[in-house]
Image 1: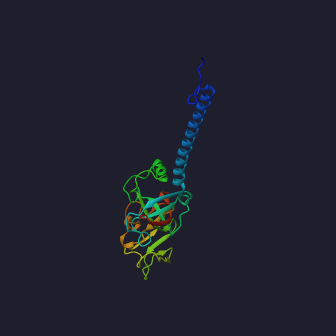
Image 2 (image 1 turned 90 degrees about the vertical axis):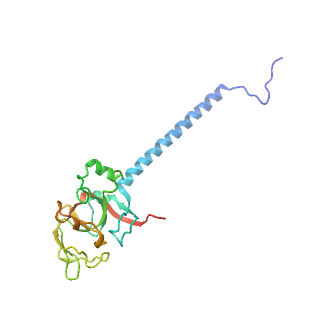
Image 3 (image 1 turned 120 degrees about the horizontal axis):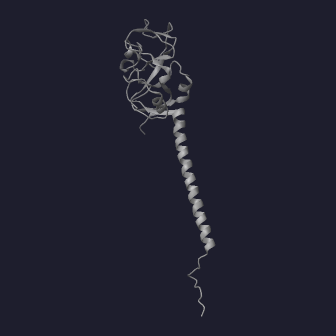
Length: 217
């Protein structure tokens, strides 16, 4: 008697097996492609972040009351890359070769800083008070800084503007920086008499601060 096929048993279909295998292969390829795209997005996102914005945390009281300890700040990279730094900007810069007694950052280290790689304790945040070609003097009879012979209105800083008297001419392509908390800030005044004279090359700037807030939720 010829055998019969019961309802609970099926006969393998080679065509269906091949089709199913092809679907599995296509699915694997699809998810592999998705994975590759995701990695590319992450890498590009890091590059965009490095060349557009970076985030830092304020470690000290040198910029109070404008910036508080542990504030999270965002810096805008394009202005630094284009050299568009203005007086009054609060900027983050690489302190190697000035505030940090290390050799100047190498080109590779500069690129690393653009994408957030490398040591974090070499970065400083200060306010740009004067740029190349400016003269700056402390202080007039009312305790104000004199920028190019004119009193500088600093509603963010105490009066007098500095307990340290100085008179400087800022060289081209450099800047003079100070913290808003003038009595508790290591800034350009701290480097007077040292090589460089307190002038920070503008190509060390990571970017101006465009936003800040508490880093603690």
